[in-house]
Amino acid sequence: MRSTTGLLIAGGLQFPCSLGRSGRAFIKREGDGATPMGRWKLRRLFYRADRMRPPRSGLAARQIRDFDGWCETVGDRNYNRLVRIPYATSHEFMKRTDGLYDVVVELSHNECPRVQGHGSAVFFHLRQLDGSPTAGCIAVSLKDMKTILQLCGRKTRIVV
Image 1 (tube, rainbow, N blue to C red):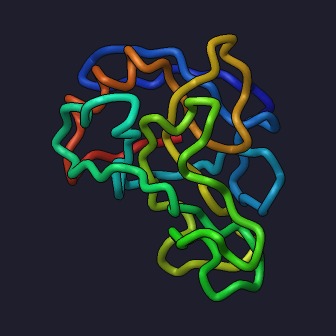
Image 2: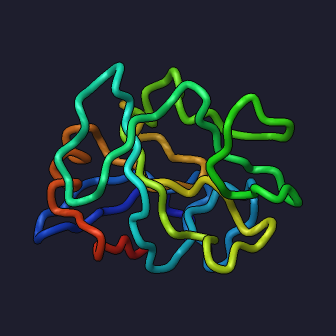
């Protein structure tokens, strides 16, 4: 399933979205570039308070702090979890300079049970202006993200 674009449907509305550079996969592996197929809960909404106000949503919003990172090291006890940086092993910076995480939602992929090597940092975040693929996430424009988040709450699910 190699398509790197899709349609996100919310509240009867359709939004173009970007998927992983390797398309979709039933079995996600760390670094494979695929968006995992499944039904994912929207866990935590993070936003860049230095760039915007908290988005309106039924999800609780938390500002991204300078020391927020996400562990992506297979074998680490904090694999696929929020960590405080600097962090000793490989991690992703949540406060990205490219703006893709100005609004980012943690998805429930590989959460319970958390399986080492089955993918970390699978998020719902902002899309690059050219609509290019993600590293395995789901991404939409800022305008669309704001609309979608207003329709979301604790029971909302993303189905890939």
